[in-house]
Image (tube, rainbow, N blue to C red; front, side, top):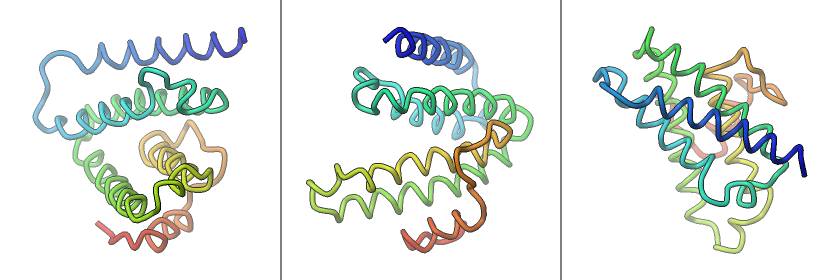
Length: 155
């Protein structure tokens, strides 16, 4: 229980720090990336996220937030590269959402279906903060899996 509380504290601290960086004047070249980051954070940390995502995902959630921090550092330096990477993730997310919408509602709650959502988070880490690592390789093979599984067109 103490471990869970520590992880939640680290997650909330990371969210606080990211939100501080998101405030203020925004360079228009960074606006889309910042909007994507806000949407990603909303899917990771929300009221009830520990139960909703599962306490086993807390360590991953913290790593995803650390990846967002790395992304923010790189975004300021090269917003065009960030945009290109974001479009790749966006294509996968859109295809995944279309696939999910075609599933019967009960099937959407199955673990293998939910796991794809976490694979997309790992894809984000591989694009924006590769130095943090992923629990399994997100290579071009995995990217090809996303493209063929969801019939994602290349950007």
